[in-house]
Image (cartoon, rainbow over all chains, first blue to last red):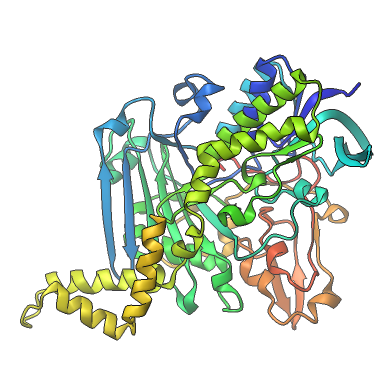
Length: 435
Length: 99
């Protein structure tokens, strides 16, 4: 008999959600994570969309250590000296259950693992699982447990929840070397404000309100493509960039300098003025949609969350944690059903694949297939920000020159930027499909 | 804590804000093979690494594991196969307080 029904490797959003749900349904579960304390290896931009976690952790938006509900969403184009920002806010986002909350993962993930422990999960921190124990059972490669320092802990099923840079997926052979076209690097600084009130005054928000803004950085050297983000926490701000690795290939661009090119932009510098940096970190994001989703299950194993590449990004928003929560819930349900049906064979676990297909996760990824091409299109990064700058400068700069219509300005700006109708038409087609 | 300067900050100054539990050298979780690096046409590890762990000294690639934030970018960027990437031993390595 195995030591556990299910071993979950990785106590992030997906892993802890899956583990807690299984334990609540009577399964004998081990949750193991390499961090001590749990959460201290985990990092994300910081907005958790939706309320999927509520199915496993009721009232989590109130009880968990979350930062602020996102009540204002902004989109901004930055050029070297200018910034254009559009902000949207609505009263509905101020009411619970919140549409989105900002989070800091070291805090949130520790809490989630504590809830899993309360639900009966055996939680081990500070242990790095080095390999999967794989055996040939009647000609089928079957995962039988996990190996650490030469010792095997046996489980009838192993859930791979070891994150974006999933070494266990590579160990199992379902994923090869990661591809720079499909992964982006997120770099983030946490910036401390003197107080919650000081932060609220800066962003013109109330005590239980928050801002999430994404930026297109149209001023980077050597054709580097990156997006920026700013999310308000309680008394800190998460400020970061997401850099397309393919765009810096052989261009001599340092990723940490892109981060600083964003922080020191006049628009951003004004927003974080007086703050102090209290943490710097980075994290790969599997942004390639269906390109990065591997085989999701097999005999004795399932993959969830970032380890399964389940992330949606359209440039204006990145959804990862809610997909992690949903895939964790579905994985738990598949394991509960498999245990009832007599075992964790590939056939019994195939329900996981079907339920993922039927969920918003795969529906979103299929509907918006090819989205990454739109997100990183040259027009988004090297044309639109400058075009917006030209229009606003042209309309509102008073310099004694006769006024022009916006249409004339747009035509001239496109001509100067050597953007032909063909390029614009191709971009418009991609945009129509993607947004 | 680091005061925000008006000018771009050096990577070392930014990393000074991040916490770690350093493991000893014989347990470095990432290693490089300098003989392979010698054949590398691009040194993209150095540009990609958000923690500035890779640097050239007299044309020879140097790597120091202590500042690593375990993101995996170098493993993606290293096409010649010099980087050998593993997680640090349990509880060692970067230790985010915010994340």
